[in-house]
Image (cartoon, rainbow over all chains, first blue to last red; front, top):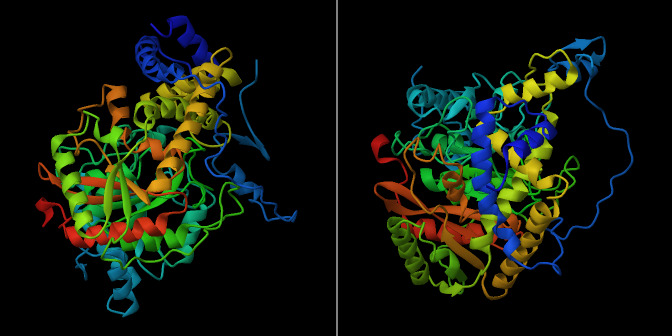
Length: 94
Length: 471
């Protein structure tokens, strides 16, 4: 198996996903199968091939450093699940 | 009210002419499409929501629900964004509005554009107008189904590994995935940023070219965009004299291509030769063996990063939790469906310490080889052609339980996406009474040439692309 249950739990913690037990079991199987398939990329010797950073050869484009209108504060907060004054409200960090 | 026009066969260009001649008002046309939606969308579920009134001065457009529309919910097919109402327009939305187009509605998509059937939409699948027991393809199946059934004259989709081209193939319409960097992604719900592109879907090539003209070009709000090197020209060509079309030998060797798809594709190429094209085999040695594995490392890796923003703080769903961390984890488990979770997990794993070089780093090197082998092919050929999808539309539920089988739907569209190249799906025939699509792949900024070739083929094929059951 390409990935163990413990590794799935570790990755879920990294990804901030609280998975149910049945999800952990299913994902262990599914990710194992997918990783088996995508591991095909390791067949190639690519030590002298540079990684792609962008498919186009672009040169940097500079914009003038001018102030632009930004969103109104009430618009910024409009979709927030919870606010207090001009702030996003969240539960305590610990 | 009674519909003043029959929308079933109406092209965008003809609709614009009707408005310009004053034969129908923009509001009447908008209402006519809403009428068609009312009649057929109960069955097709192409739209997630429609817009009753819009002060556009031209014809309507359908937008995939990953495209931000100010004041109109934009959900990306996800519970995470079910109640999210953007406070700004995507640049492409703004350009449509500036061109006078009215926003007809938002179309269904696989959740966060991840899928090939729309079955991953949190709001239920769309159906194929040719056979409602079958999928319309995905992720942009809603737009493709809407255009085929005459529920919208045209629409915009987004394409990461095939989400415009594949549904266009399965529903029998024309779809363009443009050259990477030619259409702004500002205000598009991000999936995999080095691959995501916005593009048009319509009933014919000229309409696709016209919409591409409206939305393309540099946008200061998206630093990956460039100005087009030449203006978009609406095609009139009827011949293909001297056009060199390469058919990748390795693509056509794939057993996954159904016999009926192969037969339609071969017949269309024979017709291209009659029109003066020179068709020959070409070599893309690695693209079809390594494109899929490469894509399914790069796209999930970028998705895991892009989807980190859904944390229940600034917008979108918020789950319950005593602490900040518990709230974030509950939000993400509640808000994401199975496919985004799979890809977030896969991408996080591929980017994690100890695996980065073996997976993501290696995939980015493979990508360089795919870019190079496409460039080599264009030294001998003006464009490349393959079937767009290895199969015709498949039954709803057929692949839903097998992620790898679903991923294989994009086997033929993925390589050119990784190379950043434009691709145009043109319907090329029917198999089992269902549409077959041919994709033309061009060099960077080769859209005008694709339009000319696609238009000539379309004229010569002269297919009736209205689903038989709706005629």
